[in-house]
Amino acid sequence: MRISLGYAKEKIQVNIPEKNLQGVLAPNTPQVSLSEEESVRQALLNPIDSPLLKETITPGEKIVIVTSDITRPIPTAKILPFVVEQLNQAGIPDRDIAVVFGLGVHRPHTAEEQAMLVGQAMYARLACFDSTPEDTVHLGETSRGTPIDLSRRVVEADRCICLGNIEYHYFAGVSGGMKAIMPGVSTRAAIQANHSRMVEAQAMAGKIEDNPVREDIDEVAQFFKVAFIVNVVLDEKKKIIKAFAGDVLQAHRAGCAYLDSLYKVEIETLADIVIVTPGGFPKDINLYQAQKALDNAKHAVKKGGVIILLAACSEGLGEHVFERWLLNAPNPHFMVTEIQRNFELGGHKAAAIAMVMENASIFLVSEFSPEFTRKMFMTPFPDFESALRQALQEKGEHASILVMPYGGSTLPVMRSPGK
Image 1: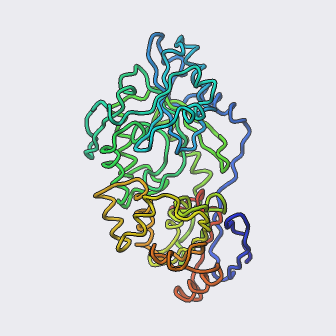
Image 2: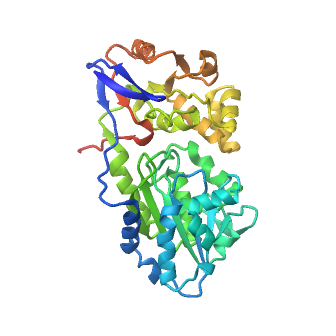
């Protein structure tokens, strides 16, 4: 069977033997009837498990709106005006509203970046600040021992509203919800404690219940009250396709259920060989970006199986800490154990790749040299045909094959018994 796969800026046609093909996994197409603005407005007018935002606010209160930093795709500028409109209707003047960007452990913003994130009109009206991991208030510890140290400006406000986007996260399960607070406005020590649990078996994409990372994040809601959230689900072009507003946990869960309806794809059995591509440029511009597709593919492959990753990586690895971890480790398992002891952004993605390697071999078709690919503990191939030929030779002529043409936005899940 001929299948078209994105690679760099082109589509390549690959042939998969019919007798081996178990299936082609692709996300569902969302049915969008509202504009981005209408979706946000409708969510605010129909909050989940909460009164209208303007009905929860008292004039005279100081409001802080926490949103993501520049490393996240949430379109804050499209959401913020509608939130501020409701606050104004509740009798809150602009001078009593502040926007805080949750940096986590990322770098501070420039003034120009802050203005771009909220939009020029909102930037001219509202005070905007980066979170302050060096100036925090200690609120206790979660049951797992994670310190709850949050930016003082956020804690000392009368009301906190959080904005976010909901997408799969490879160890926190999903983004959005309380993730705006932990790790958004938390300290490095707190983030280290929380994220170090990424190596636990239940810390995986799409999983909320019994996920030690996500449950630790959500437990922070017992120590710090978030009054209201607005979370959005985005399409491949980062446009809002649906918005959810209201209670920090219940509105978030509704958004997660919608995300699942689009991007979770059920499979009957795991495959011997999984062929995956991020979908081409720009998703395969470097390995740091392509990692998400690789991580999703691990949920479809048998233990001891083969993942064939087609990712051009024309701009290399994509992040210097990620590169250091991948190229300097003596073996993959070292990265898995080291990330628990010394959590480091960039290194965490290298460790995630190493965790895939502990379950399956990775055959990489890319622009990297063979020597460079081997340094990353992957097997290099000059083209797809030679990679598939080798995979079939290793796994047998009757090996089962699953194909994931849009690996970054497709999450394979085993079908529940009886369905």
